[in-house]
Amino acid sequence: MSRIDVLGVGFDDLTMDGAVEAALGFMASRAARYVCTPNPEIVMAAKKDGGLASALAGADMVLADGVGVTKAAAMLGTPLKSRVPGIDFAAAVISRLAARGGSVYLFGAKPGVAEAAAEKLSAQYQGIVIAGTSDGYFKDDAPVIEKINAAGPDFLMVCLGSPKQERWMAANAGKLNCGLMAGLGGSLDVLAGNVQRAPEAWRRLGLEWLYRTIKEPKRLGRVIKLPLFVAEAAAQGAKGKRKNGQEG
Image (cartoon, rainbow, N blue to C red; front, side, top):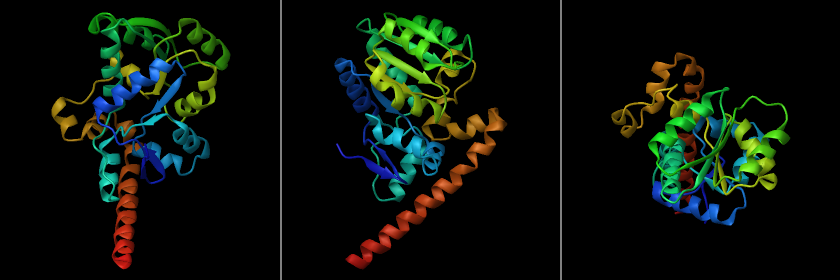
């Protein structure tokens, strides 16, 4: 399936249900496929970071994590079916795995966070198997890979932050014994209860980014990139319309 280009990053045009079904299909192959969930900040970073851009291009599935991406796609005249937030995607996959006794490995965040998240997941999703946990503070990939491979999870949550997680998945996909991995940023902190998600009403309006900025003012430096992203999408969209008008 061809991808929809949003400022140089290709996105799969999937609903949440479609993304979950594709994920389960990937898991069946046990080929350590990987999923990326870029938001506008990551899209903008990929324009200057060739390694990140390459990792995104090589992903088996690329999902629109933020409302900014879906709005940009619409401005460009190539709308996406829906946004698929990474943490919601992970929860939906884990729910399906729990129903059949599948396993998940939690990798990333500060020491102790993955373990706390594992406890919460075990309580919430009866039947899920926690294959293992590893924090994101490591110098050598080899011991981490060895531990993951010994566990052989169906689903590996890679929560190292961008661009580290995308680069890590791209570099190590061929070395891993797992069904599927996904780069999921700060999801473990949310699952552990260390970071509060926006209320449902904010999420429905696509304002989770604003809620998080209010709660975490240090994110302001990242959020100011959003207007640049929207402006570039609008400019490209207008350019495309002019070109199509001339061709018509």
